Image (cartoon, rainbow, N blue to C red):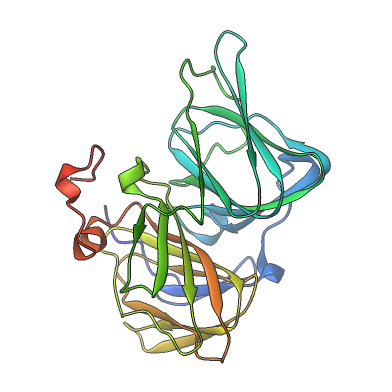
Length: 278
């Protein structure tokens, strides 16, 4: 995988810097019209120059539903609030619904056709990883096998203490997510990541709660952030996140594709996993 080109200047309301940006809700893209009775807005994706992960803010009002979606690659979603249902549509007319409450995550395998809906309303963040340039195009055919797996932030597959004392890998390589994974990370007041780099992954961190500072260690720049902001780090930049404002910082996201070097540093026998990036 090649390093992304560095982008300077201002493009479509996204102020970008070499290696790192912080995107506020005021900078999200317009509604893409993918959800009847709701909105689907880009936080990080092709508009922002990302290629490895897209992250969208999905707000589903009562009774809202998306159009059927499918991607050549994987996708992953996190339920920020409310209750959503992800329904996968199978060849032969079959369908399987999965109810997702706050804190739940859903991983979608390549080619699976699915819709997101909410009876009483829900907010989600997520999307296809890698970026899907054909997002919203009607699926060409239905999959024969189920492709949706659900998870929850309180049932992590792996803890990574050098990220924080409470860093949970939930949708990760060990669970079969190669390109679309989702971590849940808590930084207590005064806590800071160990400085680290992802040699082949973009890192996207969506802040659910708390104020702190994102640090581009490679360039020496520091960026304040707060709830609703999203930190995006390009491939190959050393970085850290600090809860240095006296508040507990909670986030979801992480590197995409899976960072095997980070997993090895956490003690994972990557070569023994059924799916790897080797």
